[in-house]
Length: 231
Length: 149
Image (tube, rainbow over the protein chains, first blue to last red):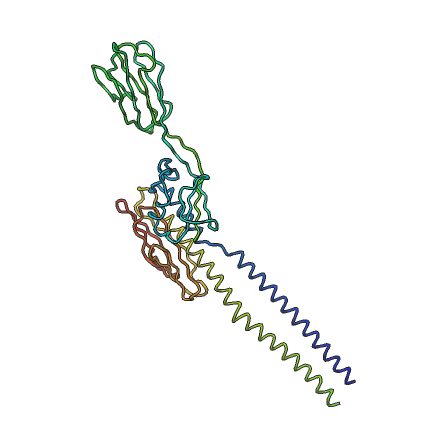
């Protein structure tokens, strides 16, 4: 009987031990899941916010890079250097920053392979010069409409000796006038907001090549601005 | 016979004490080690996100058009982190979150357009928090201000 009793007592203890082990295992699994959840939630929000605000600052109208909001100026982009980042954004000292436009690295202050990247679609605008030599022939007062808007026009007049160009109008407004004849290069500022039509008043015959018009239309392309910050 | 009677009592007492010790151990590990650690981990994440939100709000508070002279921007902060109120200040061009618990804290650099000449002020988390941006001539001053909640 004594043996029986001890066997019963042991049976109870074994059951208890198993219960304790199972409970501990369940707790362990619970803690592991909680750890995993914390691990998943870990994300460097400040790094991300810093990258986002730097990207926003670069395309802000105040920025040295931008022509207007969200539009970058191609010549300013070409001049942008790593030095500008350090110098203009002193708050970013101690952070590694890389600024890229499409696949070209504009500026970098360190290795940012582990950083957070913000991408923005921006426009890059560039003024390119284009030349138009209207095919003039005969007498009359020719008018030339520039195909694209421009902020200035460089007009080169080289008429024959027996022809005088007295007046050049842009959109009916007199820009150049000389009774004894205009010749040579003239730069005229025009409104970039409307299409310019040049009117030439000539006394005599004009032929192709006598009037050369150089204008500077804006060409925009979209690009991806990438800002990576590694805190 | 007396032995058998004792054996049951001893057995039960043993089981009870094992259970009590086990529960005691469990409670100690959970409440002294794991829980505060998790609370701090969660608080660090919340602090991180709060600072990130505020720096985003600073960004939107800056008027981009010269037609706007003054903007006021209400900010929703979590009133407490880890059960305690905390401070958000501007220090040396960085946004700093200060918390009574030494392990919780965050700082983020302030990157704003060049026209913004100064960012100043501080907030306590249980106040109503407002960002004001005021333009004078070509410069913009940004302030962290408080109202009544």
